[in-house]
Length: 140
Image (cartoon, rainbow, N blue to C red):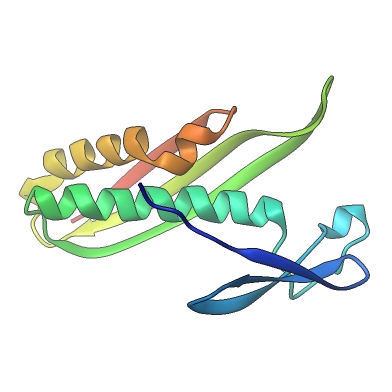
């Protein structure tokens, strides 16, 4: 079992600082749509998208390495959609778009399998109530 600890300290207004013992501090705040600062602060909603995107990437890197696939590059973007629902505000969907370049185009099938495994095994995605959609564009 692994435990990951963080703390949040209020700064002023609708902002604070996210901390972890061995990592850089991260300025956090309420989304600007809800009266938070317009720039310079990560929102919880940003972090959901970033958490899913980085979890899929790190999971993919595990399966890619295990399959002996050689990457030239990996880049992705993630978006979390928040909507009003009958139960209140909720993130209703997260999409991740990955662009992966291979050193050897003959490894595309293996890459797609690794990306599928990453999508299915990402523990961050597994805890969400909403769907996570992954699209992969392969460049060789």
